[in-house]
Length: 253
Image 1 (cartoon, rainbow, N blue to C red):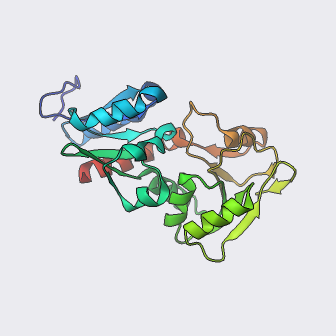
Image 2: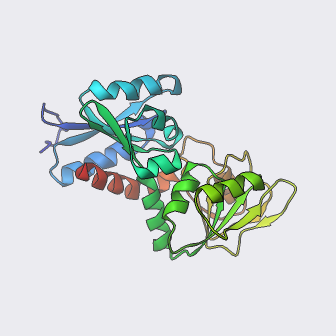
């Protein structure tokens, strides 16, 4: 097991937490605490990687001593093109937030969506509004059994294509645009998976409002939630749950 000084040996399994500002996140510190509590000879290393260096860094992991990595939100789409093996969830969504080495190959999967689903179950949310059609929206839609989901986007044609791709029959689709007033107060939770620069059209939010942005990423939803004095929950607000889910995947391999 690791000692109290967090020293590593040749047998220590190393994992990375890769992000533009990985060193400012608690992800690695909390993960290492979990490793120590479970007497695991493992260590999570924060890796501050700029976007220009991301492809090079992850590609070189195949021949490094690092066994895998958790990918911060800003790089989950870029990761996919580097993978040698993909889970079905990665193939269907076009995102990957955790990678493992398999020999000199990289295999990828998605873990963060499961955390979001459990969080929604914990607050007993059933009626969900999703804004946007990005990979997070795809992952949630594929796993959202038991929720009553309504979909919102500014381009109805693209939204209909999204529903068709996700095999969502009779989906509740709605347009959201800056020339409208949109009231989400009838929903238990709003999930913003859009790239909208602002959400000025929203006049009321749900009791709980989520996105997967970390604290270093600009969040339109957080800005709107602050304006309306509503509860906002982002990536860093779920860091304990995320690290525990990542740990389970690491142990499973």
